[in-house]
Length: 499
Image 1 (tube, rainbow, N blue to C red):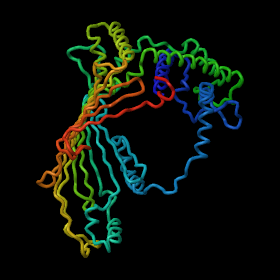
Image 2 (image 1 turned 90 degrees about the vertical axis):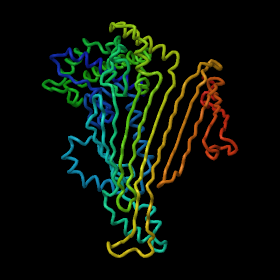
Image 3 (image 1 turned 135 degrees about the vertical axis):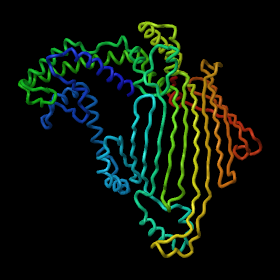
Image 4 (image 1 turned 180 degrees about the horizontal axis):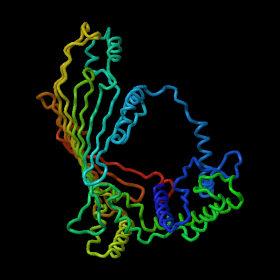
């Protein structure tokens, strides 16, 4: 699917370049504006068909027929929901609808959770450039804190909780968060002292490198044939400025129109096959992985206020670092000796071929550090009417708590080879340090080193050595170091006899 999608992108680029030479014929390429729902069989008289829909039908007849049958089957077999989602999200969303319309220039996204218990509003004031900044407001359905409900006598707990739940406001439980990350605005194809390493995963930043890899892309549909077709198409609808929006049965020569649409669809299919072959032969499928492996550093801070009866206010700060060994930087660095545009482009293609033929390294490092703090929480008295205390309620007093969670994961292929396959090593270190009040509640540090030894392309033996600062954190309670030996299979490869 990813390859086919890129083929469509490449094809649209080629068609757009060709269309720029058409100065006298205002024609819109149908594939850029037509959706699957618009496709229709022009020979089916029960449904009016547009030119664009007929073109898509001739372009993908099997896809259209399969999609129609699948939709029919899905409608027939789909289970109908018997329990509607919670009304909280819809009620809150509607109450803020006018407010959001007034701030539509600032609010980027408003979504309701599938269970109807939360509304998420996103605002990204800095979506481009060197600094990326985003804010999120999550309104969750307020709930009575467990510590409060458990402090109510059991004999009156159900009725009291029901009464208190009705008194909670829709906006009691709010979580505000802000995320920040750095990104390279433009990553040049040539490696230099001023632009040696790029970071971030904004695809637009690597446009120059991708353009160098696409320097010899085929043109797709012959521009001359496209111009001729465009003029002939307008001839079927004299006076129309958008023939693709017209109905097929309104043409002055319906059989000739269908024949022309089939002709263009055949040209389009040939161009797509050509572009697909180009995409596969140039190993462009690993470019998204190289971008995803770019160094990425991001930080998020959030504050949650669950309301007076919802629990303690809490705040969280998180830092994440991601880095893959094979990335766009390593691709560019391999070509740092070249200076001309043509030489750099040739080198980048050769290096991409070497990466694809030798196997893309899976070496990757992920570091996550999160600090969470909850404030002291007290409920001395509980009332259902504002004046009369609940009889038997035990005052709630929870100390402030804090927790630091650090996790480091990394993997690397080793130089040793077994059955022509490299040995892979993975290291994982996770630590949790929590404090409740003035006392340390937990101090857990666990590390694991796993060596994956291949016994062929379908069988691997993972050997894991674990270390923990306390014995109870390991399966083996008699030692601070544990070991595990296992075996994993690629079942489809085993059963099919393939590799």
